[in-house]
Image (cartoon, rainbow, N blue to C red):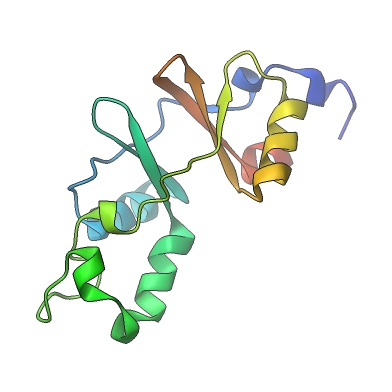
Length: 138
């Protein structure tokens, strides 16, 4: 990576207007959005950012469907995997960066938070998302 690349503002590499979901939408909907748009991260919004669901979260559910805490996720015994509100698996402490941050600052945040993404905001509004794929593309 060229040293000048990491000094660039995060907005230069972010995916603007990311695909988002509401917290009462089904986890199945999140999975379908990920597949259709070839993405791994879907922010959860209502009036503001509520969290994020990742492809890793979905994969964990599918791989451990028989071992789920159904009540915690809002599932009944007869519910199929992923047919519960996405809020049941939302990561609530999303990694967030500002539109003013440099790519270097975002990389630092990702490393500090052991995260694969950063949601880029301006105030409380989501402007975009940066993932490892965006950084690798530099």
